[in-house]
Image (tube, rainbow, N blue to C red; front, side, top):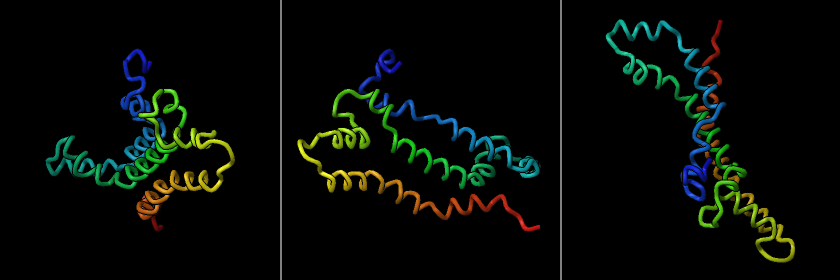
Amino acid sequence: MLKSFGMLDAYGGTVLPLLVDAAGVFIMKQFFESVPREIEEAARIDGAGTFRIFWSVVLPMSRPSLITLTVLFFQGSWNEFTPFLVSTQSSEHDTLTTGLAHFVSGGLGSGTQYPLKLAAALVSTAPVAVLFLLFQRHFVRGANSGSSKG
């Protein structure tokens, strides 16, 4: 498919397959179904149209879901290996995961270079860990938003 669209060994061919994820569609569908109808009705009574209700009322409420989706999407695309291996042929478009695979498979020459391999693995996992730590409070807020005292 990528070859027929002219996106083989191009940036578009690496990004396009990762744009839509079934888990992301499910997460957002579940959130939008959980928004109470009363909120939408109150906004309509105040004179808001469909786009205004979405933009000013529902979208700010979906911040925890969007942050969760962003972190999951980033982590999933950061760790993807197979699509990048298939869609790129030159080393110019190598990603960190394909470069790490070439490095581990003997790109450094003879001998086992465990300290270098472990350092490369640490460098490849650090951005996902940092992103999670930055948005950890939003995960907790999103997990607790559905709970109520009663």
